[in-house]
Amino acid sequence: MKDIHTNLDNLTKKIAAAAKAAGRDPSGVKLIAVSKFQPVEAVEAARNAGQTCFGENRVQEAKGKYASLRAQHPSLELHLIGPLQTNKAEEAVKLFDVIQTLDRPRLAAALAAAMKKSGKTPRLYVEVNIGHEPQKSGVLPEDLDNFLKQCREDYGLKVEGLMCIPPFEDDPSPHFRHLKQLADRHHLKHISMGMSADFEQAIACGATEVRIGTAIFGERLTPIN
Ligand SMILES: *Cc1c(COP(=O)(O)O)cnc(C)c1O
Image (cartoon, rainbow, N blue to C red; front, side):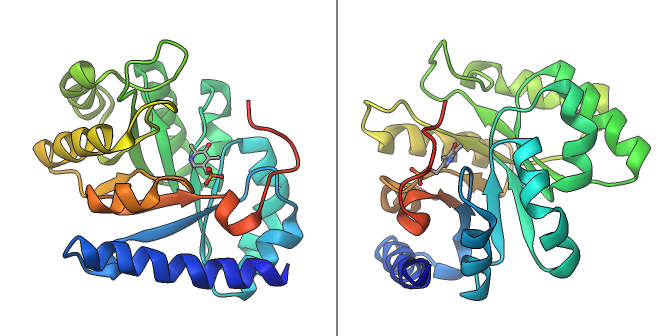
């Protein structure tokens, strides 16, 4: 757990250096500590080291880990970064400050209904399937204009950012630049891209949020997917 503190310090330095190298203010890049498959003790260790923003992939897992932490620490910010099923929309709206994976009209409808019912208004980002990968979720880049319009006009949802996960085997930079262009075109200020292996490139391309797990917490107990 001591490593977590050191890893966070190192990462913070690397993020600042990458921002400066790109002529950007380091305060414009937020670190989201991705704690999926990590025990609550690891989250506590990160929090004790000063980390306030966390990301989780699954509603159920996040609820188990964060329900009491959230009550104790109101400044803690929690992002959902994994796919969301419509039947979990209500729980997600109650638990998360940011939902980064809005990607289809049915989910937009479910979130709109859940927000109305609970009075809670998490920030919403649209996930873009930037590499056109058939197995991946996300809106295709060419469908984004329409989808954003639909979110706004049909469901009254305010979308404030975009997120993407580029294809594993590609050079991520062209995909990151593409997401940045899409965000700029729609005046969306939150751009969530970059993970442990490629956050420096993402920052060079304009990321405002990087989602990092392994480089903070080490290898996960269970493989993802
Ligand atoms: C797991 C995950 C991350 C973090 O990945 P690392 O390689 O461990 O940094 C970031 N974003 C998403 C969507 C993830 O599922």
